Amino acid sequence: MTTNLEAADAPPTTATPTVTPVALTHRPGRWIDGWNPEDSAFWDREGRGIAGRNLRWSIFAEFLGFVVWQLWSIVVVMLPTAGFSFSTAETFWLISMPSLVGATLRFPYSFMVPRFGGRNWTIISAGLLLIPSIALALCVGNPDTPFGVMLVVAGLAGFGGGNFASSMSNITYFYPQREKGWALGLNAAGGNLGAAVAQFVVPIAVTVGAAATLNLSLAGWIWVPFILLAMFGAYRYMDNLSSAKADLRGSAAALREPHLWLLALLYIGTFGSFIGFASVFPKLIADQFPDFSSFAVGSASISLAFLGALIGSLARPFGGRLADRFGGAVVTMSAFAVMALGALAVLWTLPLANFWLFLGCFLLLFVAAGVGNGSTYRMIPSVFAARSGLRDAHHRSGDVGTQRKAAAALGLISAIGAYGGFVIPQILGLSHGATGSYSAAFIGFIGAYVVLFAVTFLVYFRKNASLAGQRL
Image 1 (cartoon, rainbow, N blue to C red):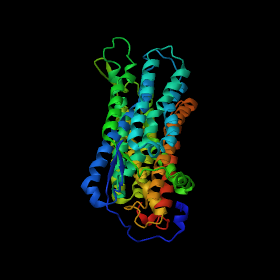
Image 2: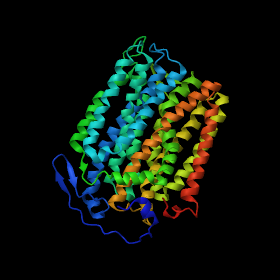
Image 3: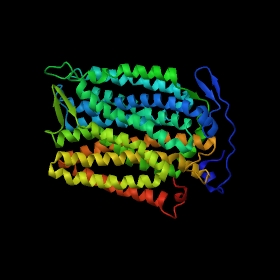
Image 4: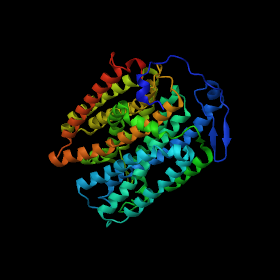
């Protein structure tokens, strides 16, 4: 078998690949044989409709995954009101533990679609969300629940974070190379919106019917019927592709590919920033601006923190679309430049104690991170296609082996990048614990974005860079 590394040393090919007319075969269990979205006639005739149906239910299931993943980001802010007494350090651990577990689960989840089928694994992974939802509902209803138990239950929310890797790996098989950016962007954005919805809905739901205390258990119970609906929808309307096969040797080759690690580093900067800041934003607002952290609507308190996750999620598909048009490298590089400016603006506004200025600067940071999420993820299949020898890697995905390596890389990179959701809250917590301020953390973030801008420029954009001409 020719690895990506071996193919990269071979002379590039300019020949147009022969596309065999597609004849689909449907088998029991909603298995499909003969899927080839690169065949334009097939794609226009029936492929687009089938792919769109699978994408819609994938988005819904992943959306719920993000909801569950980010429940603790808003629940921890309300724990003192519900009678819990945890230290600042313990609070940051409850915020970051779901990201740590979710990032780790993304590694095995990356290989579940080839093992079980995209439809089958969506049913299973959605069903697993019932565990952290019900566990949260039970433990937050009792203020005497020990911190250790709370930490374990928070870790179970990582099931929701793992869903992203399998969902994105599944969708990449359904779409042609020329439309992967938009499709993956929509799938990811729909999932990312779950963070915003969790932070918006939970503060309202837990106050419904409550007199003096919060009914915090509803933060978990309200998602159970939606999870059951996602399981039914995946069972009834999604498909398994027989072409989505595991290639362990290809995955091993992908891990030896230097560009996988470079792209993972970029993804830590984009997606890691998004999920890290989204999870900690309610805490930051509550700490820095207690008088502006919520609006009272009757007995309900609606946190403004959901705006960050909302804006970042909506920006993600446009990052993929811009990358489709202009190339991922230039969009990613621009995103890091704006993220550095946004973090610098947040740093400057902290001493001013102006909530609206702080919120505006932070939303700029979320927009840039969202755009960078989409563009960086769009670069992954293009980079692997280019390393296999294709000249027009921006529009062509290469052979089946290359596509499988790229699919494995999508999952692996998403797993590595998600660790940013653990690192960012921990850095902010350490900064606050050591100095009483978050300023030191933001100085570090600015430096990191400048370094990632330089890496993107030198490796993927600079005129003499080996892959720059590919418009990745």
